[in-house]
Image (tube, rainbow, N blue to C red; front, side, top):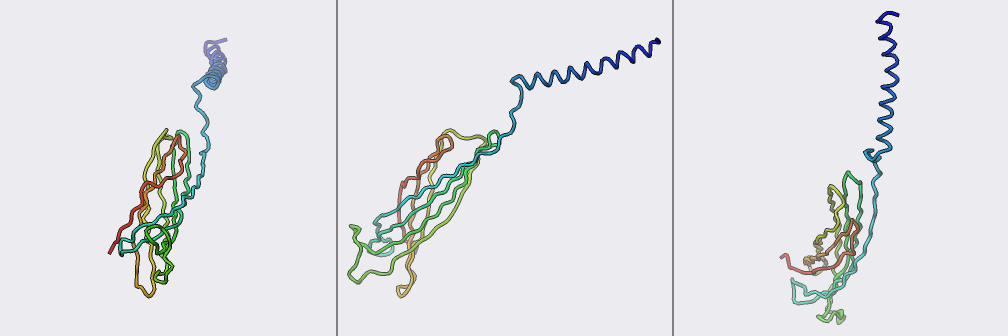
Length: 186
């Protein structure tokens, strides 16, 4: 056998060994702790809360009081995408009425009452994080515009309600009313 043929046999013999070594190395990584984990599908959870509102407030545009009653609905969706991040999307709707009342909350029924106020509100927000935060919270302000129209002209005022929402390990608490204020925009 000439030298060229001997080298050729050695190279042919080495190729399967190198391939086996590469496969063995890849197999060792799969068995070891250096294997990257397979991507996981995002996990989405939906939380829905209904917060009732009932409060006597002074009508800031007159000398009367209003019994404001209604509800605020929160729908909060959290999406945990693992290493890709954590996201929150929220929808907020509120609706209700305001009725002429005494300071005690008793409705005015002596014939001097006007038609009820009505209000609706809808909004949303979202937030994203690099990873799921352990604890965080915030205050959400909802501004409603209770109004009534008719023979009394356009009659309305601003009703601002602040809600506090806290999250623990990505799970929201029930929203709590922190403050309810009224003002006259005119």
